[in-house]
Image: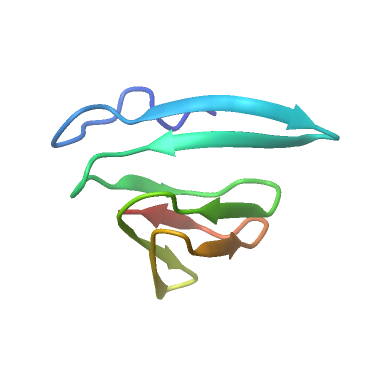
Length: 84
């Protein structure tokens, strides 16, 4: 599923680039503009977010996880989540 297709964003459409695929693990760079939200979704594998710039909030299992640049967050397999 390409989560970026046919979604409305206040600013620019986010960019999603596959950087590498190693042993079945995809390394993806996702860039969204401040104030935009990637809608709720889930993936069938655990996901790991490393925030390179700014701040982000991830609602996961009805709990808010806020991280700053340089922080790392694990998103469990099949966990419904979004990111702002």
